[in-house]
Image 1 (tube, rainbow, N blue to C red):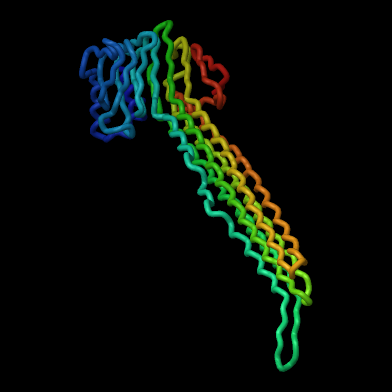
Image 2 (cartoon, one colour):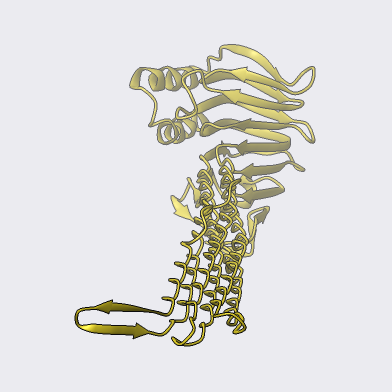
Length: 403
């Protein structure tokens, strides 16, 4: 009767999330030592999946890996109440729901795992570069043609003028810088693990117990977007034609010089990589006691936080814009007989190509999840454990941890 009273107290703490009527049924079954079945075998014919919220069985035998699903969903716990649990090596009870296992005695290699700490989704990489500027920059204006030599007779007298040189062509416009790539998407945070409660106070001489509630790994960050290409420079304007000379009015003049081609725009910078998601937190693990006569040969508790997501890589910069073509020199004006033709203007220089855009920076890694707590129900105390080391308890003696 003393054993039963102890289990009733513990069970009251473990199933507080359940409806009152369901909890009362469990308490009544323990108090009256009534079970729904005499013996239940998990994984009798290999790994299996079972669906239930509460299982009351006198003897639970675990032969292989068995996944438990609460029919109401992962937000609702699964509870197993038995007089004795016997587990084979490499067997396991696992569930995405919070797990509560209550037994008077445990034998074999007992392995219980909460699988709620799922890995966050990796971010989707950009598969298209930033929008390119496809239209070249504006062209330079052509130079005006030079006025030819001539004269005009009026009542005011005779007006004469010499030929003018052709005007120089305008420079092509410089290309604009390409669009910068967008930052990569961030990875999804890992999910926090649920809890594992294993309330058992008597064990076989060689019994080992493994309790796991590991936080999910953060998702990896996405690749940044490639920068857009720089705009091509505009074409230089052509030089104007030189004015023609005439006898007695001066020589012909040279054509104007061609305009410079516009310089190409720099490529857009590549987008930075996305940040990795944070690891999920480890789940709460509950044990009954650390007294040497009430513990198995070995407890191994792994409720570490999930690993951080890896950062996304930065993307390449956009390609440099091409320089614009130069304008042609204007043709020289012609002169009187035997005078010849004036010189042609010089062609303009071509535009220079722009620079390739800068490569994006790598994103930031996510933060590692926090370790879950380990609660000793008998004394209502938490263990002081290393944040990054699995806790081992050999016959009540804690490795790398202290109460």
